[in-house]
Image (cartoon, rainbow, N blue to C red; front, side, top):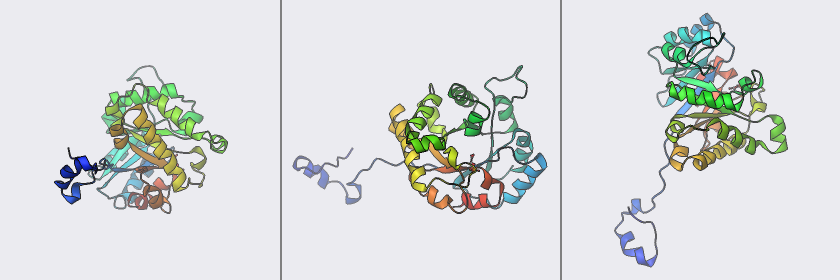
Length: 276
Ligand code: PGA
């Protein structure tokens, strides 16, 4: 390889390098943007099909991965409704066993068979309301990869931790636990969603700088836990009251590769976010 050292000893080598090649930078991996809707517990199956029709033309964008993460009962009709479009389908939850006596649960093979590609894991509502801890979340991440589903792994701090100034340690701990035993090749396919709990559904968005600070921290952590190539490949979303008005600024940040969108994913605004 060429050298970029401009000292006397290397001067003759440098001279032979064409001008445009003198400054060799570490190539920044072009990460594909991913805009995912998290429909949460909204939309009956017929309402879900109607929403797909309403959004169909608005979310067209071949440069972006567009995902609808929908309630379990909407998966089959939504997969049907988005056939032939650029939309991918995700689920909001699953359990780590393939089948058996787990009343009320749904398995990864069921999701795969229905046409699901992405799976939200570790959302703060699942952590806080349904008591999911990092041990289960870690098992879910590994199970998702083993089953061919792409995890959207959520992390984020409460308002108390934000105010206490300990949010960085909290995020690092969540990610470190949740990725225990997950390989670098898997992490390259992973999507991480940074969702400060105080910004979810509250209308209070983190500023673009606040969001970028944590997304950059997550990427640095991945570099530490794995390597730079893995950190360059992993896609990191921001989530928390992202809307048509603030998406462009958030998405302009170097370490924000997309968004996980709740409320605004149920409206035509979602198309504006996809095309922000
Ligand atoms: P919100 O939800 O966009 O309604 O704040 C985001 C999320 O919980 O994923």
